[in-house]
Image (cartoon, rainbow, N blue to C red):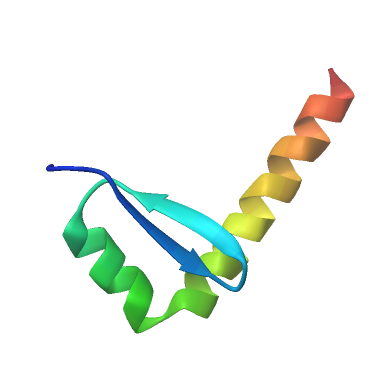
Length: 50
């Protein structure tokens, strides 16, 4: 998919597999930031259960 890409948004670094994914992120960064926050919270909750 090409060279990994990195963007900073709202003080957070986001990593992407390719340039097309960064383009999609740039079109609606709040949407992706919200999804990522939910996923991180879910993973943290699962880790605490172990």
